[in-house]
Length: 241
Image (cartoon, rainbow, N blue to C red; front, side, top):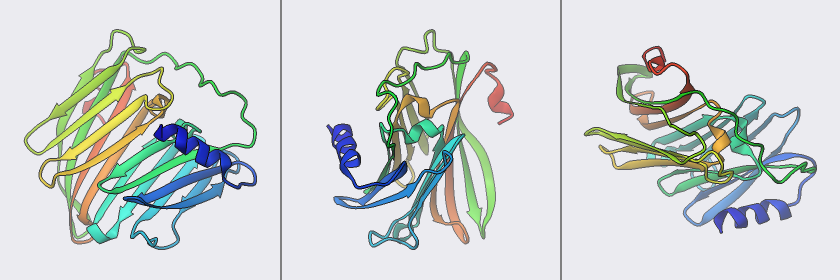
């Protein structure tokens, strides 16, 4: 129902030409932003911190889709980047605490409502969670906390990955044939209790994605967590990434 309501909202909004449209919200209070898509590129940004106390930077390019949500009042920042399919008309959702952003392409001419078939995937899906501390703008104490190497027997079947230690955890659920919620990612910092969440088209992870959570002031003292997953034929590729 949430996806249907979002699609109706975008389909009925006034527009001129192709556009990237985003809904930025804190709790139940949303604002709407949009930018034209020119040569498969678009940028949706808040000029200053919005009336919600949130900053948004969403960028669509031919090879990537990047969404950054900045909550200065709580000194939190969440960034997610993946395939430009993450900004498809199916819409994606990025959540951090009570803040959330949904972005989708609004196209004047829709060639087909059916998503393209998923491409054949490499043999392994490798996920890594890295941690660092920023002191006076410089990264310190960088370490790789979690690694998960997975070899699904059939990439069209639901794939669920989870890993945890005493301070962090993540979960990735991938369903190649689900165009709405085929990729679902949760990153949790057990120390602060903060949780970051992304859900969107399965094609967002072609061939990889990155999610980065920053808590604190990077110019002074901040905790940084980065989760990345990549399809690869080399199960030991995480050692060089």
